[in-house]
Amino acid sequence: MSTIENSPAIHDHVFLGEGHERNERRTWMVIALCAAMMVAEIVGGALFGSIALIADGLHMSTHASALLLAALAYRYARRHAEDRRFTFGTGKLGDLAGFASAIVLAMIALLIGYEAVARFVTPIAIDFDEAIPIAILGLVVNVASVLLLSGGEHHHHGNHDHEHDHDEPAHAPHEGHAHARGATHRDNNMRSAIVHVLADAAVSVLVIVGLLLGRFLGWAWMDPVVGLVGAIVIAAWSYGLIRDTGAILLDINPDQGLADRVRQLVEAGGDRVTDLHLWRLGPGHMGMILSVMTGTRRGAEYYRSLLGRFRALSHVTIEVHPAARVSR
Image 1 (tube, rainbow, N blue to C red):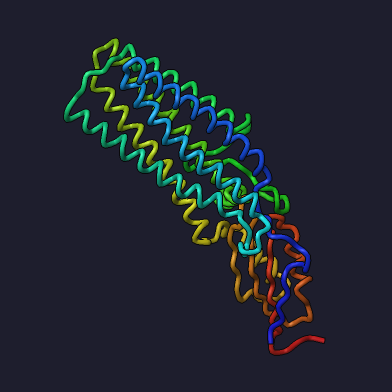
Image 2: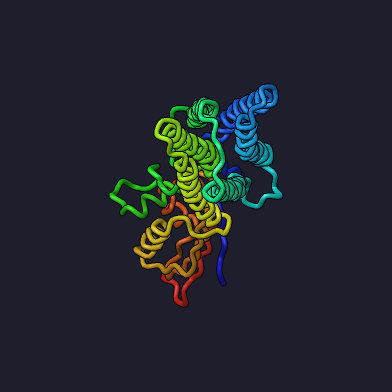
């Protein structure tokens, strides 16, 4: 017969990232900036008869909508963090919002790609003197948005991750494990917001280059070319977000290296790990269910103290099964 002991009797299920409220405030600030820019462009375009200005304002609205999704996810997760209906808290809500935002980003990439191909087939006249200032203004707004979201801190995007986790004893982890531990602390909701404004900034840079080449060298074909390049870049970032957030929503093991270290640590004492489940609960928080078969009289608290060095393990359930023969 097995004995089951859970984590200490008094504990909570709040698995939000350390910078949750700060990131929420920054997201609302960027929404205000984007909304003001959007209204100014649409109103200005209507007053001065500029279809390019109106189009850029409508384009800005798609990113403002994605940022609104991120902000609402932050707020809902914070307000319902202690709601017992959420068995393991609301830490994954940011990943859900990031997944939805990545889908929107993929749709934007498809639309830009479609428009670029259409312009190859049917070129249209471009008012360079009007379009270039608009693109520069859009770039300035996007750079300001990135700075506001990051707050001067380093954030990763796309498929790169340079964050490090110091939850485990000092040792030299292999590269794959270091990457996985960094992903454990990654806030995918903030990541998706930053990717949106970075995508817009990247497109603005490419558009400016294409417009300048078209304006001064007569290379009008560069406009759809840079559009295609921008669509590919955005699609790549979208794929990275979908892959990472989808893995979290499906409870794929976020760090196989950590799972292997836990198994090695427990079995080094002569016990046998019969089952092990590891999943992410939220930024910087992981849950684990560990089943151990032992020939000693060790209880769950022994294994809990053994695993205490892994501070990212925020919710641990341990099952202890006695072997056929128990030592006295």
